[in-house]
Image 1 (cartoon, rainbow, N blue to C red):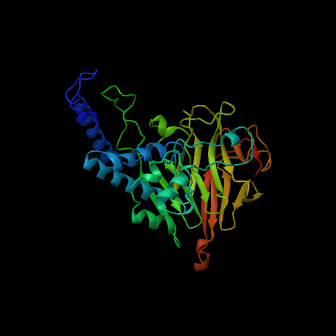
Image 2: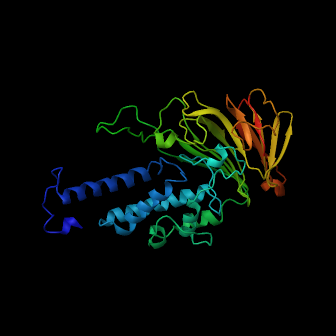
Image 3: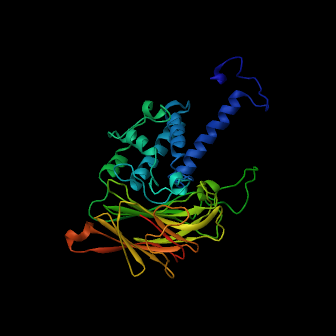
Length: 372
Protein backbone atom coordinates (compact mmCIF):
# COMPACT_ATOMS: atom_id res chain seq x y z
CA UNK A 1 0.00 0.00 0.00
CA UNK A 2 2.78 2.41 0.88
CA UNK A 3 4.31 2.13 -2.58
CA UNK A 4 1.14 3.75 -3.95
CA UNK A 5 1.29 6.63 -1.47
CA UNK A 6 2.92 9.69 -3.09
CA UNK A 7 4.66 10.53 0.20
CA UNK A 8 6.38 7.14 0.36
CA UNK A 9 6.92 6.14 -3.27
CA UNK A 10 10.41 7.63 -3.56
CA UNK A 11 11.32 7.83 0.12
CA UNK A 12 14.44 5.90 1.07
CA UNK A 13 14.05 3.70 4.15
CA UNK A 14 16.74 2.99 6.76
CA UNK A 15 18.47 0.47 4.49
CA UNK A 16 18.67 2.97 1.64
CA UNK A 17 16.03 1.27 -0.54
CA UNK A 18 12.62 2.62 -1.47
CA UNK A 19 9.30 0.94 -0.73
CA UNK A 20 8.95 0.15 -4.43
CA UNK A 21 12.35 -1.56 -4.45
CA UNK A 22 11.38 -3.65 -1.43
CA UNK A 23 8.16 -4.67 -3.15
CA UNK A 24 10.02 -5.67 -6.31
CA UNK A 25 12.55 -7.74 -4.33
CA UNK A 26 9.87 -9.60 -2.35
CA UNK A 27 7.81 -10.16 -5.47
CA UNK A 28 10.81 -11.70 -7.23
CA UNK A 29 11.46 -13.86 -4.16
CA UNK A 30 7.89 -15.17 -4.04
CA UNK A 31 8.01 -16.12 -7.72
CA UNK A 32 11.37 -17.83 -7.25
CA UNK A 33 10.31 -19.68 -4.07
CA UNK A 34 7.01 -20.94 -5.49
CA UNK A 35 8.59 -22.20 -8.73
CA UNK A 36 11.62 -23.74 -7.04
CA UNK A 37 9.88 -25.63 -4.24
CA UNK A 38 6.99 -26.72 -6.47
CA UNK A 39 9.47 -28.43 -8.80
CA UNK A 40 11.69 -29.85 -6.04
CA UNK A 41 9.34 -31.59 -3.62
CA UNK A 42 7.30 -28.85 -1.92
CA UNK A 43 8.14 -29.14 1.79
CA UNK A 44 11.24 -29.33 3.98
CA UNK A 45 9.02 -29.67 7.08
CA UNK A 46 7.27 -32.62 5.49
CA UNK A 47 3.85 -33.37 6.98
CA UNK A 48 4.56 -31.38 10.15
CA UNK A 49 1.70 -31.35 12.66
CA UNK A 50 2.50 -27.82 13.79
CA UNK A 51 3.91 -25.92 10.85
CA UNK A 52 1.77 -27.01 7.92
CA UNK A 53 -1.03 -24.63 8.89
CA UNK A 54 1.30 -21.64 8.91
CA UNK A 55 2.71 -22.51 5.48
CA UNK A 56 -0.73 -23.05 3.97
CA UNK A 57 -2.18 -19.83 5.41
CA UNK A 58 0.67 -17.83 3.85
CA UNK A 59 0.13 -19.51 0.48
CA UNK A 60 -3.61 -18.78 0.64
CA UNK A 61 -2.86 -15.11 1.35
CA UNK A 62 -0.62 -15.02 -1.72
CA UNK A 63 -3.35 -16.68 -3.79
CA UNK A 64 -6.03 -14.22 -2.63
CA UNK A 65 -4.15 -10.98 -2.04
CA UNK A 66 -0.84 -10.77 -3.93
CA UNK A 67 -0.77 -7.68 -6.20
CA UNK A 68 1.12 -9.57 -8.91
CA UNK A 69 -1.19 -11.86 -10.95
CA UNK A 70 1.75 -14.20 -11.65
CA UNK A 71 2.35 -14.71 -7.92
CA UNK A 72 -1.36 -15.42 -7.41
CA UNK A 73 -1.31 -18.00 -10.22
CA UNK A 74 1.87 -19.65 -8.95
CA UNK A 75 0.46 -19.83 -5.40
CA UNK A 76 -2.64 -21.57 -6.73
CA UNK A 77 -0.54 -24.06 -8.70
CA UNK A 78 1.61 -24.76 -5.64
CA UNK A 79 -1.51 -25.35 -3.51
CA UNK A 80 -2.86 -27.75 -6.14
CA UNK A 81 0.30 -29.86 -5.93
CA UNK A 82 0.33 -29.66 -2.13
CA UNK A 83 -3.25 -30.91 -1.78
CA UNK A 84 -2.66 -33.71 -4.29
CA UNK A 85 0.31 -34.79 -2.13
CA UNK A 86 -1.89 -34.58 1.00
CA UNK A 87 -4.47 -36.84 -0.66
CA UNK A 88 -1.79 -39.30 -1.72
CA UNK A 89 -0.62 -39.65 1.87
CA UNK A 90 -3.89 -39.49 3.83
CA UNK A 91 -6.96 -41.63 4.31
CA UNK A 92 -10.38 -40.10 3.71
CA UNK A 93 -10.55 -38.88 7.33
CA UNK A 94 -7.25 -37.00 7.00
CA UNK A 95 -5.08 -39.50 8.91
CA UNK A 96 -1.63 -39.17 7.31
CA UNK A 97 0.98 -41.83 6.55
CA UNK A 98 4.34 -41.80 4.80
CA UNK A 99 7.43 -40.03 6.09
CA UNK A 100 7.16 -36.78 8.04
CA UNK A 101 9.32 -34.23 9.90
CA UNK A 102 8.84 -32.07 13.01
CA UNK A 103 6.07 -34.31 14.30
CA UNK A 104 4.88 -33.62 17.84
CA UNK A 105 5.40 -36.91 19.63
CA UNK A 106 2.84 -37.07 22.40
CA UNK A 107 3.96 -35.30 25.56
CA UNK A 108 1.74 -37.62 27.55
CA UNK A 109 3.56 -40.62 26.07
CA UNK A 110 6.93 -39.14 26.96
CA UNK A 111 5.77 -38.64 30.56
CA UNK A 112 4.74 -42.25 30.89
CA UNK A 113 1.06 -42.28 29.97
CA UNK A 114 -0.32 -45.11 27.87
CA UNK A 115 -3.13 -42.96 26.47
CA UNK A 116 -1.44 -43.18 23.08
CA UNK A 117 -2.50 -40.04 21.23
CA UNK A 118 0.68 -40.24 19.17
CA UNK A 119 0.18 -39.15 15.60
CA UNK A 120 -3.00 -37.05 15.67
CA UNK A 121 -2.83 -33.69 13.93
CA UNK A 122 -4.90 -30.53 14.23
CA UNK A 123 -4.32 -29.98 10.52
CA UNK A 124 -6.95 -32.62 9.77
CA UNK A 125 -9.77 -30.16 10.45
CA UNK A 126 -8.17 -27.74 7.98
CA UNK A 127 -8.05 -30.43 5.30
CA UNK A 128 -11.76 -31.02 5.94
CA UNK A 129 -12.41 -27.37 5.10
CA UNK A 130 -10.50 -27.73 1.82
CA UNK A 131 -12.45 -30.84 0.84
CA UNK A 132 -15.87 -29.82 2.07
CA UNK A 133 -16.63 -32.79 4.32
CA UNK A 134 -18.41 -32.60 7.66
CA UNK A 135 -15.37 -33.13 9.89
CA UNK A 136 -14.14 -29.54 9.84
CA UNK A 137 -13.69 -27.45 12.96
CA UNK A 138 -12.40 -24.06 14.04
CA UNK A 139 -8.92 -23.11 12.84
CA UNK A 140 -6.24 -20.87 14.33
CA UNK A 141 -6.79 -18.43 11.46
CA UNK A 142 -9.83 -17.43 9.43
CA UNK A 143 -7.71 -17.47 6.29
CA UNK A 144 -8.85 -21.05 5.67
CA UNK A 145 -12.54 -20.25 6.08
CA UNK A 146 -12.48 -17.12 3.90
CA UNK A 147 -10.09 -17.98 1.05
CA UNK A 148 -11.48 -18.30 -2.47
CA UNK A 149 -9.03 -21.10 -3.32
CA UNK A 150 -10.79 -24.33 -4.52
CA UNK A 151 -9.23 -27.77 -4.02
CA UNK A 152 -8.36 -29.42 -7.37
CA UNK A 153 -10.55 -32.26 -8.68
CA UNK A 154 -7.65 -34.72 -8.69
CA UNK A 155 -7.00 -34.15 -4.97
CA UNK A 156 -10.70 -34.62 -4.15
CA UNK A 157 -10.83 -37.87 -6.14
CA UNK A 158 -7.70 -39.24 -4.43
CA UNK A 159 -8.94 -38.28 -0.98
CA UNK A 160 -12.35 -39.89 -1.16
CA UNK A 161 -11.62 -42.82 -3.43
CA UNK A 162 -8.06 -43.92 -2.73
CA UNK A 163 -6.82 -47.36 -3.77
CA UNK A 164 -9.40 -50.14 -3.69
CA UNK A 165 -8.00 -53.45 -4.94
CA UNK A 166 -4.27 -53.14 -5.39
CA UNK A 167 -1.57 -51.40 -3.31
CA UNK A 168 0.18 -48.26 -4.59
CA UNK A 169 3.85 -47.44 -4.23
CA UNK A 170 4.23 -43.66 -3.86
CA UNK A 171 7.67 -42.07 -4.29
CA UNK A 172 8.06 -38.31 -3.88
CA UNK A 173 11.45 -36.59 -3.90
CA UNK A 174 11.54 -33.93 -1.13
CA UNK A 175 14.01 -31.15 -0.16
CA UNK A 176 15.92 -31.11 3.12
CA UNK A 177 19.44 -32.28 2.28
CA UNK A 178 22.08 -29.59 2.79
CA UNK A 179 24.43 -28.51 0.02
CA UNK A 180 28.11 -29.31 0.53
CA UNK A 181 29.05 -25.71 -0.33
CA UNK A 182 27.85 -23.13 2.22
CA UNK A 183 25.53 -20.38 1.08
CA UNK A 184 27.35 -17.41 -0.44
CA UNK A 185 24.94 -14.89 1.09
CA UNK A 186 25.78 -15.81 4.68
CA UNK A 187 22.63 -17.85 5.33
CA UNK A 188 22.76 -20.51 8.05
CA UNK A 189 22.56 -23.29 5.50
CA UNK A 190 21.93 -23.87 1.81
CA UNK A 191 19.63 -26.59 0.55
CA UNK A 192 20.66 -29.07 -2.09
CA UNK A 193 17.79 -29.07 -4.54
CA UNK A 194 19.07 -32.29 -6.04
CA UNK A 195 18.14 -33.82 -2.69
CA UNK A 196 18.38 -37.56 -2.13
CA UNK A 197 15.48 -37.57 0.35
CA UNK A 198 12.53 -39.63 -0.87
CA UNK A 199 9.16 -39.83 0.86
CA UNK A 200 8.16 -43.43 0.23
CA UNK A 201 4.72 -44.85 1.01
CA UNK A 202 3.31 -48.31 0.34
CA UNK A 203 -0.44 -47.72 0.43
CA UNK A 204 -3.09 -50.44 0.50
CA UNK A 205 -6.85 -50.15 1.06
CA UNK A 206 -6.40 -50.89 4.79
CA UNK A 207 -3.05 -49.41 5.80
CA UNK A 208 -0.05 -47.32 4.78
CA UNK A 209 3.61 -48.13 5.46
CA UNK A 210 5.96 -45.23 4.81
CA UNK A 211 9.19 -43.44 5.64
CA UNK A 212 11.57 -40.76 4.42
CA UNK A 213 14.51 -42.57 2.85
CA UNK A 214 17.75 -40.80 3.68
CA UNK A 215 21.50 -41.27 3.46
CA UNK A 216 22.90 -41.39 7.02
CA UNK A 217 26.18 -39.94 5.72
CA UNK A 218 24.51 -36.77 4.40
CA UNK A 219 23.66 -33.62 6.37
CA UNK A 220 20.11 -32.35 6.63
CA UNK A 221 18.38 -29.14 7.56
CA UNK A 222 17.36 -29.09 11.22
CA UNK A 223 13.72 -28.61 10.27
CA UNK A 224 13.97 -31.76 8.16
CA UNK A 225 15.85 -33.97 10.64
CA UNK A 226 13.88 -32.95 13.72
CA UNK A 227 11.35 -35.49 15.01
CA UNK A 228 11.19 -37.65 11.91
CA UNK A 229 8.25 -40.02 11.63
CA UNK A 230 7.76 -43.28 9.78
CA UNK A 231 5.82 -46.48 10.24
CA UNK A 232 2.46 -48.11 9.65
CA UNK A 233 -0.95 -46.47 10.02
CA UNK A 234 -4.23 -48.38 9.81
CA UNK A 235 -7.42 -47.17 8.14
CA UNK A 236 -9.66 -47.96 11.12
CA UNK A 237 -11.81 -45.90 13.49
CA UNK A 238 -9.16 -45.92 16.20
CA UNK A 239 -6.50 -44.62 13.77
CA UNK A 240 -4.21 -47.39 14.93
CA UNK A 241 -0.50 -47.23 14.21
CA UNK A 242 2.85 -48.91 14.74
CA UNK A 243 5.49 -46.19 14.86
CA UNK A 244 9.24 -46.35 15.56
CA UNK A 245 10.22 -43.26 17.50
CA UNK A 246 13.13 -41.99 19.63
CA UNK A 247 13.16 -41.92 23.41
CA UNK A 248 14.42 -38.42 24.34
CA UNK A 249 17.22 -37.84 26.82
CA UNK A 250 15.28 -35.30 28.91
CA UNK A 251 12.05 -36.34 30.68
CA UNK A 252 9.09 -34.55 29.14
CA UNK A 253 11.06 -33.44 26.09
CA UNK A 254 10.09 -34.64 22.64
CA UNK A 255 12.73 -32.98 20.45
CA UNK A 256 15.38 -35.08 18.73
CA UNK A 257 17.51 -34.65 15.60
CA UNK A 258 18.89 -37.23 13.16
CA UNK A 259 17.39 -39.89 15.40
CA UNK A 260 17.17 -42.79 12.98
CA UNK A 261 17.28 -43.80 9.36
CA UNK A 262 15.30 -46.39 7.49
CA UNK A 263 15.28 -48.51 4.36
CA UNK A 264 12.11 -49.76 2.75
CA UNK A 265 11.16 -52.04 -0.12
CA UNK A 266 7.43 -52.03 -0.74
CA UNK A 267 5.93 -53.52 2.42
CA UNK A 268 9.23 -54.13 4.23
CA UNK A 269 10.87 -51.52 6.45
CA UNK A 270 14.05 -51.57 8.55
CA UNK A 271 14.75 -48.79 11.05
CA UNK A 272 18.00 -48.10 12.94
CA UNK A 273 19.23 -45.40 15.29
CA UNK A 274 22.00 -43.28 13.73
CA UNK A 275 25.41 -42.67 15.26
CA UNK A 276 24.89 -38.91 15.05
CA UNK A 277 21.53 -38.93 16.85
CA UNK A 278 21.01 -35.94 19.14
CA UNK A 279 18.96 -35.67 22.34
CA UNK A 280 17.89 -39.32 22.37
CA UNK A 281 18.65 -42.46 24.35
CA UNK A 282 17.05 -45.35 22.53
CA UNK A 283 14.69 -46.30 19.74
CA UNK A 284 11.21 -47.42 20.64
CA UNK A 285 8.27 -48.81 18.69
CA UNK A 286 4.85 -47.48 19.59
CA UNK A 287 1.93 -49.88 19.15
CA UNK A 288 -1.63 -48.57 19.51
CA UNK A 289 -3.32 -49.98 22.62
CA UNK A 290 -6.44 -51.15 20.74
CA UNK A 291 -4.64 -53.49 18.35
CA UNK A 292 -4.82 -57.23 18.90
CA UNK A 293 -1.40 -58.60 19.84
CA UNK A 294 0.15 -62.06 20.10
CA UNK A 295 3.78 -62.80 21.02
CA UNK A 296 5.41 -65.98 19.76
CA UNK A 297 9.04 -67.08 19.34
CA UNK A 298 10.44 -63.56 19.70
CA UNK A 299 7.94 -62.09 17.24
CA UNK A 300 4.97 -59.86 17.96
CA UNK A 301 1.92 -60.21 15.73
CA UNK A 302 -0.41 -57.20 15.56
CA UNK A 303 -3.79 -56.85 13.84
CA UNK A 304 -6.82 -54.59 13.60
CA UNK A 305 -8.81 -57.37 11.89
CA UNK A 306 -8.10 -56.37 8.30
CA UNK A 307 -4.39 -55.50 8.25
CA UNK A 308 -1.79 -57.51 10.12
CA UNK A 309 1.80 -56.82 11.12
CA UNK A 310 4.70 -58.79 12.55
CA UNK A 311 7.40 -56.97 14.54
CA UNK A 312 10.75 -58.75 14.65
CA UNK A 313 14.09 -57.73 16.21
CA UNK A 314 16.62 -57.87 13.38
CA UNK A 315 19.34 -59.17 15.69
CA UNK A 316 18.78 -60.97 18.99
CA UNK A 317 15.65 -60.66 21.05
CA UNK A 318 14.28 -58.54 23.85
CA UNK A 319 13.94 -59.53 27.51
CA UNK A 320 10.77 -59.04 29.49
CA UNK A 321 8.17 -60.00 26.89
CA UNK A 322 5.48 -57.83 25.40
CA UNK A 323 4.04 -56.76 28.72
CA UNK A 324 7.24 -55.42 30.27
CA UNK A 325 7.29 -51.74 31.18
CA UNK A 326 10.17 -49.38 30.49
CA UNK A 327 11.09 -46.13 32.22
CA UNK A 328 9.07 -43.99 29.83
CA UNK A 329 5.98 -46.19 29.92
CA UNK A 330 3.55 -46.49 27.05
CA UNK A 331 3.05 -49.35 24.63
CA UNK A 332 5.94 -50.43 22.49
CA UNK A 333 9.46 -51.87 22.55
CA UNK A 334 12.63 -50.22 23.81
CA UNK A 335 16.06 -50.94 22.39
CA UNK A 336 19.41 -49.22 22.78
CA UNK A 337 20.76 -50.54 19.46
CA UNK A 338 17.54 -49.84 17.63
CA UNK A 339 17.19 -51.98 14.55
CA UNK A 340 13.77 -53.54 14.04
CA UNK A 341 11.71 -55.33 11.48
CA UNK A 342 7.98 -55.68 11.10
CA UNK A 343 6.02 -57.94 8.86
CA UNK A 344 2.32 -57.65 8.10
CA UNK A 345 -0.48 -59.17 6.04
CA UNK A 346 -3.37 -57.36 4.45
CA UNK A 347 -6.72 -59.04 3.74
CA UNK A 348 -7.52 -56.81 0.73
CA UNK A 349 -6.45 -59.52 -1.75
CA UNK A 350 -8.09 -62.51 -0.12
CA UNK A 351 -11.13 -62.24 -2.33
CA UNK A 352 -8.80 -62.84 -5.30
CA UNK A 353 -7.15 -65.83 -3.64
CA UNK A 354 -3.78 -64.11 -3.21
CA UNK A 355 -3.04 -63.36 0.44
CA UNK A 356 0.25 -61.55 0.84
CA UNK A 357 2.71 -60.58 3.49
CA UNK A 358 3.78 -57.13 4.59
CA UNK A 359 6.92 -56.54 6.51
CA UNK A 360 7.48 -53.91 9.04
CA UNK A 361 10.27 -52.35 11.14
CA UNK A 362 13.49 -54.08 12.09
CA UNK A 363 16.09 -53.85 14.80
CA UNK A 364 17.92 -55.66 17.55
CA UNK A 365 15.79 -55.13 20.65
CA UNK A 366 17.90 -55.42 23.76
CA UNK A 367 15.65 -53.54 26.11
CA UNK A 368 12.19 -53.93 27.50
CA UNK A 369 8.82 -54.14 25.87
CA UNK A 370 6.05 -51.85 27.06
CA UNK A 371 2.41 -52.65 27.68
CA UNK A 372 -0.25 -52.25 25.06
